[in-house]
Length: 113
Length: 114
Image 1: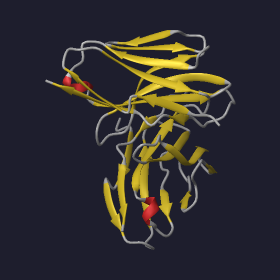
Image 2 (image 1 turned 30 degrees about the vertical axis):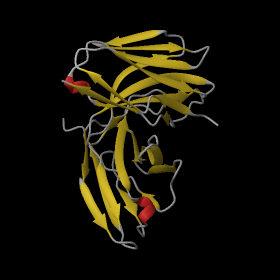
Image 3 (image 1 turned 90 degrees about the horizontal axis):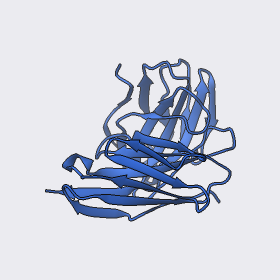
């Protein structure tokens, strides 16, 4: 069964610190992987997308990495800000030519002053 | 552009009642979808549409109906609400139906069924 597992479930860090969120998936064949940010009370917004042949993709202070051999991705946040407090969702698209994507349950990040 | 809009933002229903969640997008996207988000779980696809007049079932379609008469609108109907349908519902649209397409999400509707 295609699955996307994220860890940790939640994380608390101090403002200015770095953190790394993990995503493991079993989706195969695999087309691409996207990270979304979801603020409380809002819909998810795309941060990065990587195809199976890409290793890293950056968007400002957010850097996503992908290891297609081990089926792992990480999202690294540098110099965290209070506005980074949100849920971060890993989403994997199977390479089946279809519409459906598989969402992880997300990591809830709290950044404290 | 307003993007994807959803109404209402909050709703409380009694078991057995019916209602329609509204979704509209102004980006001329062909693909639209409905998801539900429950605590500790990833978003799950309820129904989706690849264009006006064309809809299909997702992972958890039971108890829900959809129709797509225009490109802009994609309403979700709950036929007879049940407590198991308490959830946050998100509508999304995208320009492409291929895997990896960026989906633009609405702000969500928080539904409670008592």
